[in-house]
Length: 365
Image (tube, rainbow, N blue to C red; front, side, top):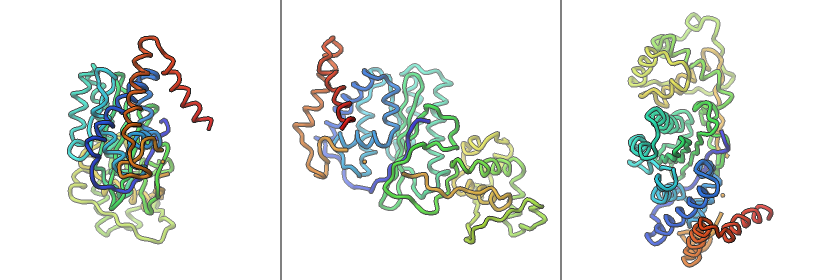
């Protein structure tokens, strides 16, 4: 998977004023036009999957460098700015209720882009699994409330989604390119202000044995697990495979009645992999946690408690930090990008090449 990851941001209340949001949409469209024309659809998807580039884009649009609104408002502007017909890219989902419509919107937009039904199903599965993993497999205490799914006419995709914990938000990025598994190190690069303690990371590279053992426990018979959890865990039950962890603290193993029903359904289906297990409806964070802790207790499969978590201004910030948005400069930026692109399409590429040279100059600095 290409470099991607997590950004952590304090929650800010309020909305972008209409005069600013309108400009955000226009500038987002100009930037999307420029990148798609110069590099193609897939490159825009790659850049959106980078937490650093996405943060820089949000700040270029006029958002505060560390505001949670950099995610929700920026993706909202992109959803209005990006046209499937013109850019070959579609955006589904959003904040709150809109996030739950992502699968339905993917189906509608996939038809516009001319994607086949099997490819459409793949995209819907990717949307659902990426949300499930960040809600249930990376147990960092952040609950998702925003999910945006970007995809191209060739089926490349990325996810930008955000969870909330108390007064902080954490943003998760995914990229389809190079994905081999949704449940083994899906976040290759990390960007965060702080790291949380006691994070059960069920997609850590070092947790392969836990994932394998969890699947084996389900495929064997979940009723045995119920006997263990009923206070009857003995050396006889665990036979000679009992391998107690070195830690001293006790960690609660708890499965709800809904979780037991989901486990029995999973047992009937006999999942072939941890990814198939996680994808099952009704199997949530508590049940996956219980399976992981039982894998550690019964078979010595060590759980990972490593938090997978690790900022740019052009036009000012909406709250006046580091300075108020310069409306004239903002409008000039929109016009400059539009004019450069239109002239390039007509064969006049001088201004267009000048903008391209600017990026290399900034890199040298």
